[in-house]
Image (cartoon, rainbow, N blue to C red; front, side, top):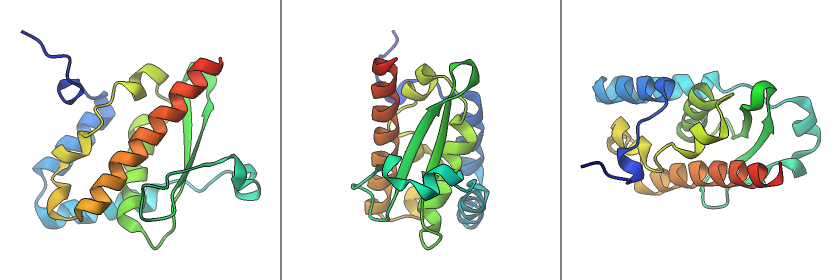
Length: 152
């Protein structure tokens, strides 16, 4: 018998690889990997630096966090995140989302389980408040993608 629960949904390949890497890594390496993803987060395009009003805030996140998506070539979703350098764990999560989902189809993004990050072993490293913020970031991203699908 199969379940329709989102927590049992298969992750996109890139995201599954990242989740598996985190889950299998020792605690000390998980934190290093998260910080590495924070450094890999690409800078915002100039048009969003100059016009931040086009970005969506994620008020549920304790760090100032903003995101915007664009339809890419072939219908994929290009995503951009603005996260302060002083919030490296949240930046790292944004880096993971960008690495795994940038350019993915809207359906792929919408199918990601809301709590996939709980399988990464981050609860040993990050406060529950930050973990809730991570969930809020993914929910906001999905809401933006849903809204843009409806507008097309």
